[in-house]
Image 1 (tube, rainbow, N blue to C red):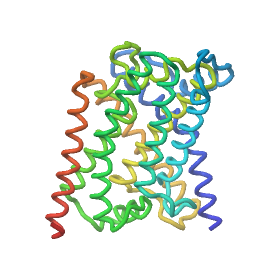
Image 2 (cartoon, rainbow, N blue to C red; image 1 turned 135 degrees about the horizontal axis):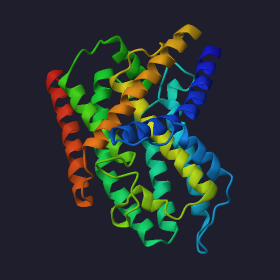
Image 3 (tube, rainbow, N blue to C red; image 1 turned 30 degrees about the horizontal axis):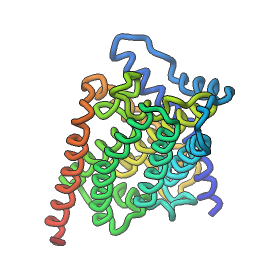
Image 4 (tube, one colour; image 1 turned 90 degrees about the vertical axis):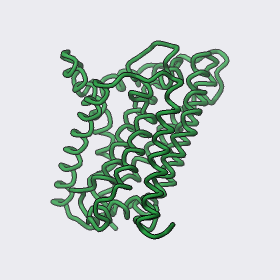
Length: 317
């Protein structure tokens, strides 16, 4: 129990350290691919620290929602990130690491963000919130269907148990796993406001989704939203790695040497995944807003195909 608590504490510290660095790594690689020098990898840390020291400026008609939403969104995202195994399995919160529970926490953070966009009274914020909730209809459906396929394969929805089972390779290579991975990856792009769904670097009002909802945020509140966005990117990257590339993760009960090896493997996989995201975003254009439901509908179709193939191959049809 002491080892599990210590592993959970180390995991929390690594999350706080790695979240801004992963975001900075993606930005740095994109800048290099575009022939620019780019900001240093630690720049998100500097931005969050600078914004945290500033008082937020609130609209005169803003309610308590504007004040509470960034704290609620960050808390829900942080709890979800703690439940996703990173460098090791069998941590203290492994029993609560349920895929449906994690999806619910992410939905709570999304609702808090949308409420903040509506509460500001800005037309662009309401527009972005409406788009976000409309996209969520397709994204959540695709995510839950993909999770259903994984739960059928593993015999449950506990993420820690699924990662341990897949790490042992007992399920082998399956086409259904590839389709589920593509579906979850597409949902991850939408949830993190990445290309082709949204452009995190744009401030063109008519195309904004995520940025429109935090357009009125400033000071400490903006620092919280930036920290939540960075942590959510790390959460989704860790989720994809735990589900589809759990190799190198230290097993439950591993000692400090196993944790060190798991941390190095986790960092290496995050670096590769972040570089792949940067390459993907450099090579692809943003979709028109009205085409995003088609993109997420494709993710839902992939998840349904994964479930259908799984049911046929296992004789559950």
